[in-house]
Length: 528
Image (cartoon, rainbow, N blue to C red; front, side, top):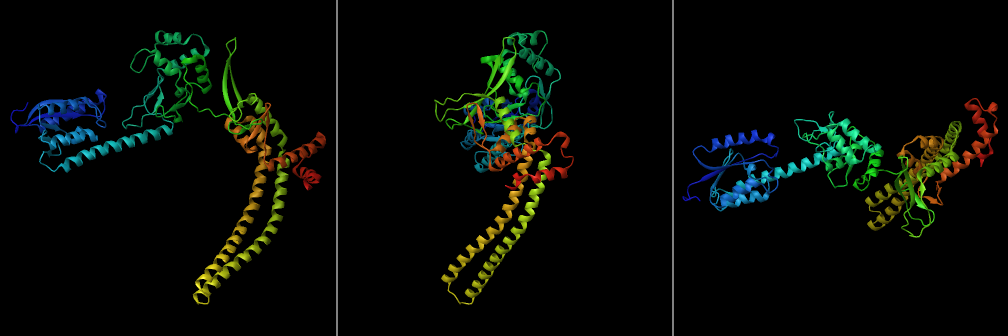
């Protein structure tokens, strides 16, 4: 206890935000040296070192210092800056209260002094600035980490087999391959995939025979082992922040494939964690049940044969949300692929027909443009008359020849006619241009869709089925494709084209573009 109330005894308090001792001790020592210079001629009864952020309440040594001040062991504080004492409203408020009540009689910092009799606003501003800086820093760091995650660079410590690059700028570290461990972790995956040993035996081999170690040089624990085997990061996916359900594609070197990851989860059984819902199935959202009208959903299954081979299947089936007693059975995705290819074969057209059809459409377009120009001219005349009548009406009103009510009535009628004429001008132009564009796109699709579907990836197949139409029906394991009108017309045209080509013997097949044009133009089908 302080016997002389006018005598001030001081605690020195120094803090560094980082909690890594090797990163902060020099900075703490430097602060203590400076604070001891500030304390020359003053009585210091204790020194506190803290390696913890002041963003939130809960610092052990800060709370101990405050408690001892309240007990009367000291009544002054020496610190490098006010922000070393507090960066949150609760701790800042505590310091302000103790100073205001005279329990703390003096706070000495490098920038200045604070006493109970001073204007409390000064200290409040200092604490407020520290708190706001901490809040803004936290917001900026969170935003920066989120942007980093979106760019494919997972924030945080790298998992086993990878390492963080060392940079002088926080937040710019990247995850790269750890040359010492990458191949060993991959071998661990291989052992599990080929089932050369049960998982725990693989762990024993990795620790004792291969010498696999963590970044701290320790053996791999059981929990860490299963974290590795169930971590989607190894095939290129990660969640950030944890438990947020926000998944991203990483740009790090992948150690395993997505299929290998799924196989490992199957092998692990109950120990395997469910993979993130990142898989995009080709036809979900495009199919309806032909019996009850409910949506068609999709699921994956893995089946292991007696010889050890593992097979992957994708099935589509009715959700039965509309009618729980729906009788439709599931169908495998490869069956749907064949049915879609079969349909695309029906609308497929030769490249020669595509060229001829485009030229014919362009000729038709040229004729249509003549008629369109005549129609446009008539509507333009009507539009110009409306504008002229509005000008005349305004002149009459300005001359006082008509009153305000009559002017407003006639103006409304003319404005409506003017808008209708303008709309007709725009629609006629757009309708013809849209027509030729739609026709060209449809012909291009019909020529290339089958090849692109057969060679395309999952996204491409989904795109092509979407182009064929929406709400296709699945009934009795048969896909009923609901096409739009342009494709229905083209389906009939494709049949006619194939019939023409089939009638021609190989020796009599046209040799050039002109011959094809003559044959196609002679078909009565195109005059219908």
